[in-house]
Length: 450
View 1 (tube, one colour):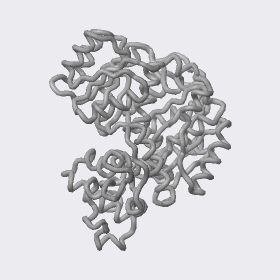
View 2 (view 1 turned 180 degrees about the vertical axis):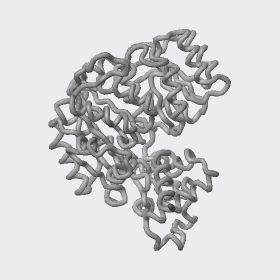
View 3 (view 1 turned 90 degrees about the vertical axis):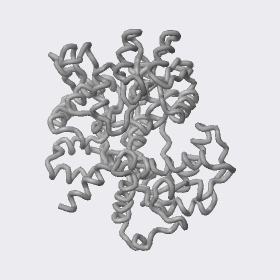
View 4 (view 1 turned 120 degrees about the vertical axis):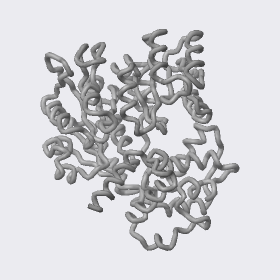
């Protein structure tokens, strides 16, 4: 829906400007407010179809803001933005009436899809034209033979009903493969619905997946269809499936077997026709051994296995991806960067990229903004200052030059945590990885220490 009126409530001027530019790029009309008081003034004077609000506002809590907004217009949709680790706050915000909660730092593609889904629910649940579906098809940038084989496999199985399990480290592009499978299938004109199974507690996740009836639990003020119902005829992406609790795994297994869902508090099952794609960044075999994941669910999901290699195993893609991100952020940020210097390319290729393609994208977005000429040089990459793991001469410390890659990664993580006084959210941002990935790494080191 082009020309949609959106109110953006964000206290940080840089975040406010960046989000405004992104939303305006997608042809939305954006009004901004730095706090809840100014936001309520704007709401009293104008009509907005959507409100995007920071979860940590000065002067007025976001919960008070939600209450005031609903009192003024209970039909307005509100998307709240919270720190990645604030799961409890996300749950409370959704119970308080938020239409959705997105984690910071924001993924722009996810924001765009969330806005589209919220403001045009009828269109998204019915269908879109094949031309529109093709327009949003993802681009997987690679020249690596193993990646090209995986793309070919994804295209070959796209029209089947077989479940797909995509495994790979965080930031490798698992969701891109899921969207590719959907877009080249006969289901492409139907919804693609994604849900992160690790971002919500069990009680809320069950309702989000399978829906609930009015009065099914405290706060269930109306009937709500679940993600499986919303994806009927299309594809559902179960992101980070191994984070799902065993109780819900059993219920999911029944959905896959019977092709029907039971709403929470419902009296009868509902038939659904959904293609299931699941992803995980964990070792599934180890999760099964630890009784954290059901083996029968694994076999049901793993009909078509896709294992994406980390970026460090396909270094030839790094320059190609870097050029792709230069083009992307030139367009988004109004820049005109032409290329990278040889020194910059050499420096990039020499990195281990624990955060994979997502980390590379963060580096290139920053470099495009910092570059004051036509070519990004090594200094524009801002790697030493952002990560703090490399001396000024650009060489690795002597004790890491011959260390195994895993040891380098471990030392880098602990060094970054020291620099941030143990703040995992800040450390993850500096490392270019998600808080969940950082937590999984720390748990892995703890287990090895006994």
